[in-house]
Length: 489
Image 1: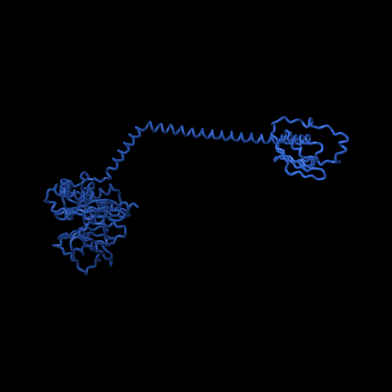
Image 2 (image 1 turned 120 degrees about the horizontal axis):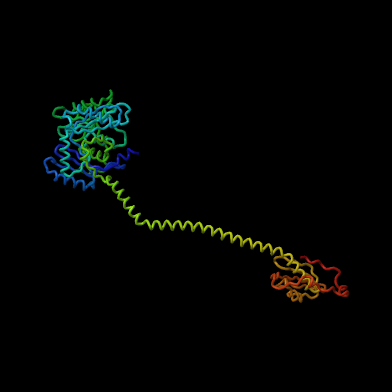
């Protein structure tokens, strides 16, 4: 995951190629590499710095890169690249070891050089290769003054080998090794190589003194290849005639280096490989060596990211000011929220009390029902007693039913019609009516009467003993039937 973030960035690379500056602006994302623009600033050494500086600023503005600091690739003839082996040690001890060996790595007078170094294999358990880049102070100072006069913000002075290493590692697939990358610029032939036996190779040849074939043989020998192993050869820059019978395996630039998903029509990957690699190192500096020859006090970092801490602190200050202004409002809202919480808790108590009150009402209603049921028997006896009292002696009851639906009685009498008027005088019943038509048989009329229970307490009900009629005369008793059917309560 960390390596993916190391491949994301935006940068601008400047390659010093002879008398011209070749500028490329790129944007690296997970979707691929995009070349936003390329330009050539001609004869920058002879022209006024402010003139070509404005030309460079216009180029950055057209790419939307006005905030980006550039990375400059110094000419190979102005730098010396050496490689040493150092045992595992801390960074402070490694810096001291490099300074101790520095005098033997360059021919310049002591204390008149700038140097930078990088560990090529940080995970090595044994001695690890350390590349050391050296340049004269006057050369670095000259270029730094020139770019500063032109108004060009420079973040780093790098070398072509470091940029090519960064471009190779922008691809996420396996790196093709051993490898030789040859870049021709006029009579100068610069070669960069990698192999298992040589972590980094950076040499330059003068084609006027050494033929191209011989230069490739020397570079291949310096890779320390195993027997039978063949290096991949990549040609860039100006065309170069190579002996087809050499042992190197040719490959195109697009097969080894990342191919931009989008680029201007005048951009040539093979011709501008070194410029593109410098821009890639500017966008993704962790992929290269990280050996910066520009003194720390002269480095310019105009990236928008440097404003993030200031923006965060300013935002916090604004938030504190807003919080101070809104403190009373916030406190009132907090107090109101506490009040609401307490009201909600009290509302639960009120709801519980209301629920208990409703439960008490329901209990009282049930008690009233039970009390009504307790007095029901006495009320039924009063109904039976009153009906028995009101019925004439000539009426014979066959059945008398008293229940929740009402009263129902049936029997026989000589004349049943007056019975309704008699029963309507009862205090314990109401709504007396014949349930069926009267049927006369054997001089008697059969009747069936229904009534409803009276409303309790509507009228005073006499005690049954007071309503008992006097016994009939003996002659009336002799005329009565021998036995009457028993009433059904």
